[in-house]
Length: 283
Image 1 (tube, rainbow, N blue to C red):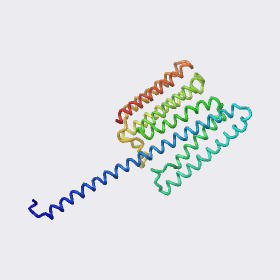
Image 2: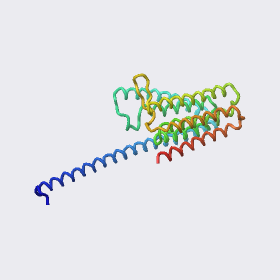
Image 3: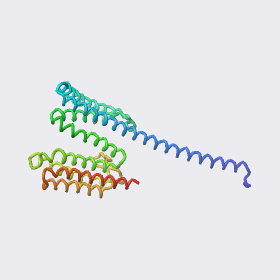
Image 4: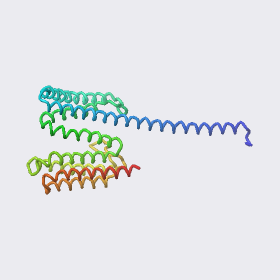
């Protein structure tokens, strides 16, 4: 029995019960917020993969149209139209992004954004002009791999840490380079220029990681600060993987043309090991 009377005891019970309800409501709200965020990420990933699938089907139709004498001219000019439409879409996406940011609109939960429109349109434009001016047969074979690869890279960007996304993109670019470019231009001026550019890119990525490590993932440009990586980014592993990519690039100087395909597979193996490492780290 409470020494101060039953009313006080009941009031205390109501206070405790109300506190527990409040805690439960807050917990439920955080769970709902997490579910909403996960649904948003899932929807964005599904949209990207649907677009990649649709573009793969379009590439098949374009390839068939260009291989047929009766449909070659119509298909050729259709690809031209898609190329210029992609350029227009890229410009419109950039304008929309600038307007949205100046008006202070919250784009964090928008499925359709200006930068999304610009990126998708730019991919269409680049693919179209690559088909028109880069040899349609070899270009379409390249795009058959590049388009799904971009979708997978976006998946990695949404669910993995940011440094992993950057390194994976670099690794995929190197593997495509070895597969389509290096084996045909080994020893030429184009090859030497591409090798130097890619090696400089590895150095720049390493330098960027070094400066970001000093400020816990924040890049300082004058008085402005940009958070590019998470505070718990794995810098040691990142430096190791960039060094491995540089070693593979150096090895390309000493292997014959036909061996470039093995360098492409080696690069993808490094990316796979990196994916396993980060997957285990996220558990």
